[in-house]
Length: 524
Image (cartoon, rainbow, N blue to C red; front, side):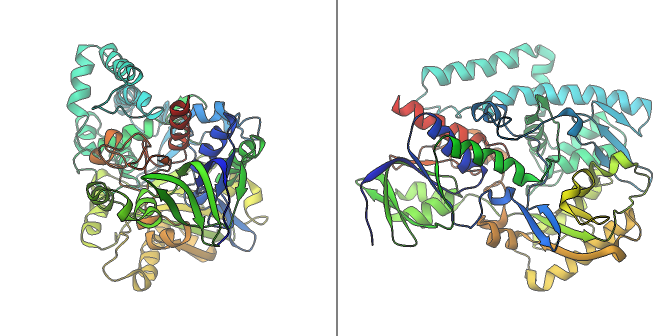
């Protein structure tokens, strides 16, 4: 085993986008930073990968809808090649056998395909949802308040939220508190009548979580989505040119320019703890690296249970970490197609958007039900993109890439995924065939990543892209666990900066940025 002196201010474990953001932010503050990534490539689940000869796709996440503006600004990502233009915003198309309905611009600034009555009901509901999501938005860009030992800054932050609530006015404030923990099904039922629109919103509220539209608190998922923004517009989403890997490339360029030393293919075997303090890491190759701070941007359970070891922290904390729910329900499908598919009743602009199969809230609920018992949905719901239509570099000439996030695919499938995968793929293809007749005959190659595959390939326990369910009891002050939501851990010098920390998953960079700011503030 080789050893070395304390020669780093910070060692960041994990080269996903949050690890890169944390490393770059720390390096920009004048610190000497080393980033260690276990795999050969950086970017984690936000990579662009070749899945068939000549066909490339965004690995897991495929739409950019919540990259935090502070991350873009702090790391000057536009200077490093990230382009966010309004022209790149994609519409959301609710597919249905009765004709499609389209939300244009930033999450339905304009709605087409619905009745005039529904359009005005949607206009009202959209404004309300954005107002309420706006109350939660300030929480995403800062540490959650530590209710026991609140600093002046944290009290000010809470005060700002109270002010935002007050600004809503009495009527809205009452309603905000009424609907906060409601299920999305009931809220949609109160205000809308078109099943296609309700199905799309129910799908968005439950995407990436073990919830159905009728599950309590499922509305929070929609708020979380609408608290994200792109190009200053809430709810907007885009398909980045070059896939998600282009976003990672911009963050990596910022990190390298700030002086971060990046080492791929360098898995960490353990975090070194001396007298209750994290003082460095040992790599799987046996090298000892010492640092003033160790920042883990990987899963919180992997960090505490595997790298630190339960013996180094108190049993209460270990129990909480073991109880984080993180079994994924979303699968990812990649199809290499001979030619672009034709979805019935969808125009050319719609094909470049986000196509959602969730014809009604009841359909989404029925798709969810089997997952409670370890079965996959016989009629799955899904979000489909055809990224090669907007970016021809992703597929051979004339051919097309289809990328879909599909629910519900329980991590622990009762029959096991070896037997279940071909059956689930068949169910997905049957759904696709209904909406894009003839698509099956054009498939050259199909790759279906179940949560078990996502776990193995991207080192995500449970295959959950939020590294922990994003539900009321695992959000804000309770993320990753109650009492330890502010990126600190019971070990001095060890910080958590991944999607398992506040505010959660999605390509936002907020956990990485907030954790780095916390370290900088502590040393100031």
